[in-house]
Amino acid sequence: MKTVSLKIDDSIFGETEKILSKIKKPRNRYINEAIEYYNRIQKRALLEKKLKTESDLVKADSMDVLKDFEEIDHVG
Image 1 (cartoon, one colour):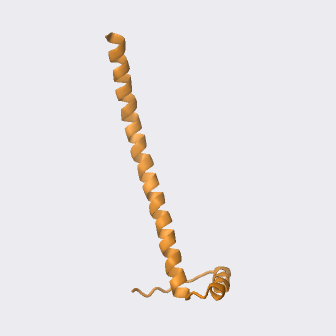
Image 2 (cartoon, helix red, strand yellow):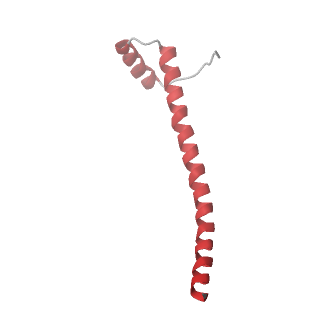
C-alpha cells in the first residue's frame, strides 16, 4: 500500500465524518472505495470518448462506401 497525504475541504471532511460514524467504516477504507468508484467512472468516460471518436471515423468511411454502392446501382 502507498501512503498519500491530501487536503480535503472542511465541508467534505465534516460530511464524511458524519457518514462514517453512521456506517461504522474506517476512513481509509471509505476513501479507497470512493477513489476506486471514481476511477471506474473515469475509465468508462474515457472509453466512451474513444468509442465515439472511432465511431465518427467509421461513419465517414461508411458513408463513402454507401455512395459508391449507390453509384453502382444507378449505372447497372
